[in-house]
Amino acid sequence: MTTALAVRYARYGDPGVLSLDAVELPEPGSGEVRVAVGAAGVNPYDSKARRGLYASAGAPAEPARVGLEYAGTVDALGPGVTAWSRGDAVFGLAPGSAATHVVVPADGLVAKPGWLTFVQAAALPVACETAYRAIRLLEVRTGDVVLVHAAAGGVGLVASQLALARGARVIGTAGTANHEFLASLGIEPVLYGDGLAARVRTIAPGGVDAVLDASGRGVLPVSIELAGGPERVVTIADGSASQYRVRATWSADLPLPQVFQTLLPLVEQGTVRVPIAATFPLEQVAAAQALSESGHLRGKIVLTVGSPD
Ligand SMILES: NC(=O)c1ccc[n+]([C@@H]2O[C@H](COP(=O)([O-])OP(=O)(O)OC[C@H]3O[C@@H](n4cnc5c(N)ncnc54)[C@H](OP(=O)(O)O)[C@@H]3O)[C@@H](O)[C@H]2O)c1
Image 1 (cartoon, protein in one colour):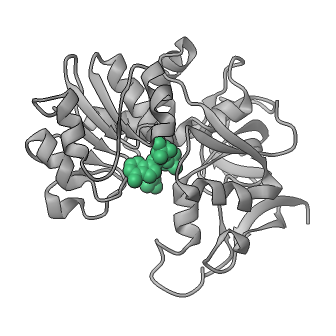
Image 2 (spheres, rainbow, N blue to C red; image 1 turned 180 degrees about the vertical axis):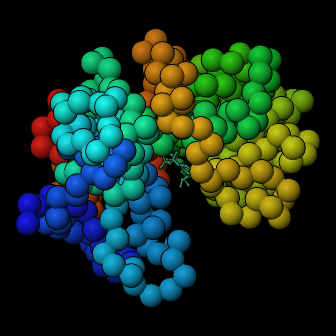
Image 3 (tube, rainbow, N blue to C red; image 1 turned 30 degrees about the horizontal axis):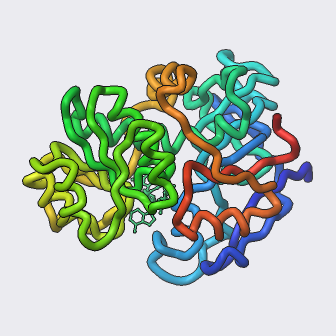
């Protein structure tokens, strides 16, 4: 068999359960393309899935793949694909992207502009799509005071910058190590944890107009308190949302190319910046996920396949 490599795990557990396995080279079907992956973003979802948080019980039915997003080069076209050519640089969302190759629907690809490296492009899909979805749900507009929990993380950082671009004032929770960085982007930092409501009221005595919970660490009650109700609170990370009558959003609501039609110009102008916290070669995926699970990142972790840029 012609082989590819893919990160997989056959049982749930610590990062040590991950292995880089030889697998059959996937062939694109009708309307699909195969991408030779140059870089793949790392997300908290990868570690949560590996720990079995989304499984009812037992081991994965078959070795599970890892990863959600990638940047790379089109290297094979399935029947009927005319919009792309071999060699095109692209990025997008794909389950199992921590691999040398992924097969994806041709209509979900975004063309990678030359001014983005593969590493930079692989850091964008999840953070940008999720943040854009949340900011639209919150209907953030000029003059709003918006509180973003976990503002230095992948999603929180993009959401904060999108809210600023809409003319909002943004208050972001973060550890003290990230305060100067957030302030440099125009985000007003406050420390998360006990006493948060009082710290926010010190700088926003009237409370806030809207809240994005990108933390998922039990911040819905304080968010409702500060926003004066659950109507303009949205979480992307707290499964108890319905208990608080807060809206939660879990999956994309727009095609990715449409999302990036709006967001790529903002990335190019520097209105939206997604810093790379660290890169690891694909072989070191366990170390990458361990760092992701440590929970204190500024921006994104990205896996590299070969020497992509
Ligand atoms: N629903 C969806 O569609 C969707 C999509 C993507 C992600 N998510 C979820 O959204 C969450 C954020 O994802 P992400 O990729 O942005 O994660 P991430 O980049 O790993 O976020 C890490 C951030 O969390 C912050 N943090 C750590 N402890 C905190 C605390 N006690 N209170 C507040 N913030 C704290 C850290 O801030 P400091 O470094 O400043 O301490 C760090 O900047 C995850 O739970 C993820 O699974 C959901």
